Length: 236
Length: 236
Image (cartoon, rainbow over all chains, first blue to last red; front, top):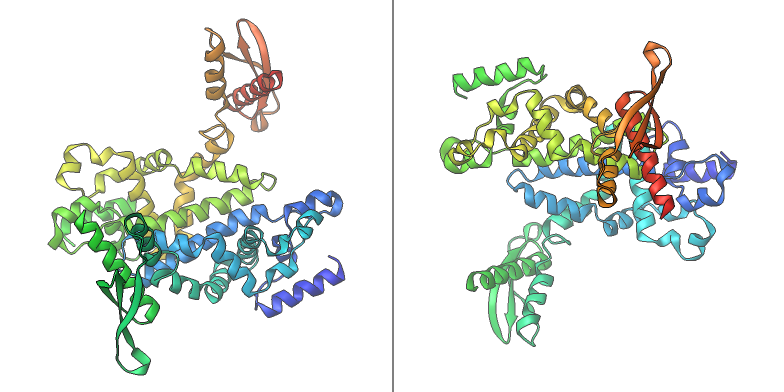
């Protein structure tokens, strides 16, 4: 490996606290196929096989986490939450957290058209990086790395992230029947500072449709939207 | 747990050489949802959350195995081979290998309509069983269990199983144009006993269409069919 590249990778390894014996697999995880196509004699494999493996490591780590975290949620909900956590957008955000784009090796075309910021490329590199850690340092380190970066994403997804975005679903439903939009208002706040609860109302045409409670205003609004949706479903 | 049930599970554990500390999760892996719906007060959870987790364990174990076994295959091929290995039919066959149907707890309706032999029920229970071993005895034991049962399936899938079943594809292609079927013949065998190779020919209307080589007669025939398909494609 070139000295400059080795130094660059060492920077990533230190900053992201990656526990690996060698930087070789980390390097491969950052090689986009276009780079190999343009430099066929460089003796580097691209990251797509690693991405295949990292995807499976990630799926299992998140599955195990959700299985333990939500002992009462049925498998269908766990599947949905996981899908939101491991979706391309979420993984690209995770990659951005550790500035992964900076370390990618890309073909010129990709480089010139903004490949370094492209969500699909970042998400693939992030999964490949997971595989690199898994192969070099075993499952425990890979799980630690994933948790360090994705737990917040999991928390969001399981409360009111992409999964269970009831407000959006309600809005789409309302637009089919009404010209008005749903409005949200906080009806009540209670509890001590460290354990606050909010009650939100969803309002349509000046009428309170439903209420919801949550630990944040956002969550209360989502719960209100959920209750309104259930009401619509019952009326059918 | 009832004594009879405990004895039954011990039989499964011994026969399948499962390394687990307790039979509780194994028991849960064998509970179909219909059984819980009919016996809500029995205090048993059904196996669907375990199936969610076992599916991820299985995917990773097979992904890792294929990644190591085929260092030169691109990720697209690995994905296809894995899909063939973890498909419902293959997992149901795996479940039948250890006679899993015998140990299922089913609702009466399922029992009466042949649920004990239903591939979807067997495949789910097999995945749930994988999760039970994984949770009770960690990844290594789960991987050992999977390899013991599925490696033959993986071998078939990667040479000439569902994935890359060129003979079937060729047959379908030929039936569109001809009334005859393709015939296969072994043209040559060579190599020492421990490293035999075969050359097969595919014949249509008494004409040799193409040849293929393999480590078994079956593989050689698949390769011959593949060559014939490539020939058809070139002619287009």
